[in-house]
Length: 319
Image (cartoon, rainbow, N blue to C red; front, side, top):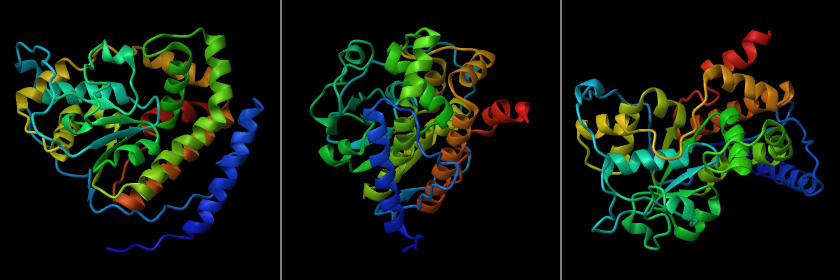
């Protein structure tokens, strides 16, 4: 079915102009960007996909985790047959590594990456650098260029709220996969990265809609955390992987993996408010709204990208 979108060409021109401005500022080490919450317009590009998977499907019944007495981590192996090359596409800091761990545990099949991170290769992702991507279930990607290099036949678009995604990205940039940089280093890094990172956050969804021609499944990080059984079942269906209820229950039990940061909710909210200025948090809220609208228009999915429980803690207490 053909859809009409409002002035996509004009939106693209605005986007390119903004990107040029951001990269100029980035090159000079500045952190100023015209606030996207004050007038920047993004239109959903025309989606060129052949098929879209609707994430809003009925719940499924699974075995309660407490009834599974013993779970052991699966031995990860390559597929014996060629699979559709499927991108696991996300903004950095959105939980890509953790999602790969869950996918491997639920299926037993290895995942790979368009990069080659030796640290990951040696820590639970034995096929991180495997060159035949068709023998792995998904391929990690943070840039749309990976789609162009590997011609993904399907895409799982992993989305996390921008507050946590940008903070996690800054943590990784300064502390690695599980490290914790000192607060002054984190704040300085997060402030310098902010203008570029915020545009990149929106851009990845925009370009995925515009570029990907195959089926797309939108996977929300927060739903993966709060409703893992249903979310994994829908993901396995999209990936065409046969899983049992025990597979799902054991994956939930073994969900943490080697790269999963732990922090209390109170510490987390305090850190966001310390690292980012109030106006920056509001710009992130606008980015979430823009992303929601693009996904709704292109893929007919209605997701709470800003994650209301988090936004209430960030904004309502201050009002």
